[in-house]
Image 1 (cartoon, helix red, strand yellow):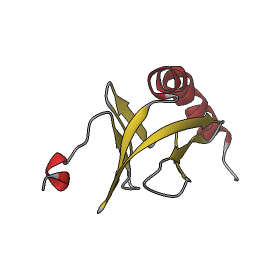
Image 2 (cartoon, one colour):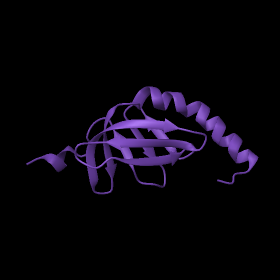
Image 3 (cartoon, helix red, strand yellow):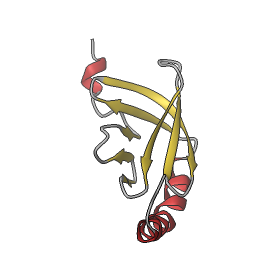
Image 4 (tube, helix red, strand yellow):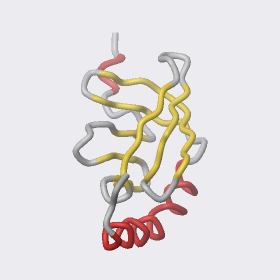
Length: 102
């Protein structure tokens, strides 16, 4: 990836702010993955580098796959992780429990 020095510095500063809180709060956590009409419970494994985070989703309901986001696009709070302009989100609680009502 070809980036100019100021973009590298920007990503480095954002990584310094986000990396440890993200890993500390969510590494190995059970969460709900949501993207459009796809919703399932999963365990997350987070790997990080200078570009951003790659989150591997392990679930019995869906084959294992990885989602990712650049440091300046990832946002998170106490109970969620999301990525701007991509459309995926992870939640501690099921965001649409009515989908599972009978």
